[in-house]
Length: 196
Image (cartoon, rainbow, N blue to C red):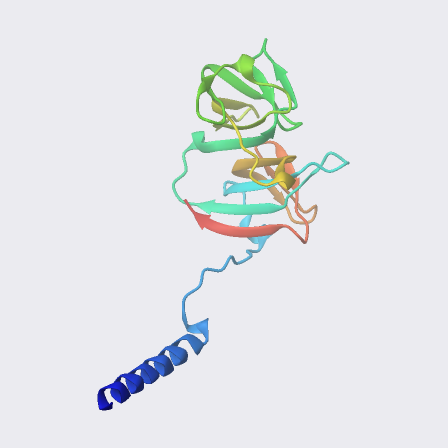
């Protein structure tokens, strides 16, 4: 019986140690938090940002999320995502936002949501797409690749998302312009800073 008593005591000590360890507050362990950043203190012309949100009844776009991005980013890494609202096959242009059209070139690649090559003719109004390319000084957007996009969250089906350099930030008007597209910032707009 002394061996059984020794094992029982050992188990009791282990249980006490485990309870003590797991009962400790977790505040000492490192956690990842998404910290809001001051949008207009960070939004300077030339700063890369990814902004998304829906069109409002007055044709403005309400920014739901703003992600400021630092790091090495090529000029051809600009993106515009959303539903196609118009197509012009004669000019090879796609309209996602109500602003300037996206200009496709002979070298533009088109892919469906599985990555299979398609053509401009396969694009349809209402289709969700992501266009990658470069924003031009004249306000045009030269498209390198168009890929059918998958809606991740149903509420984002009518969102437009733009990744590029900030052109203007107006704290008084609460607006930020990227690639000719103006977003309205509200008290509910979430923001964060990341490194690419």
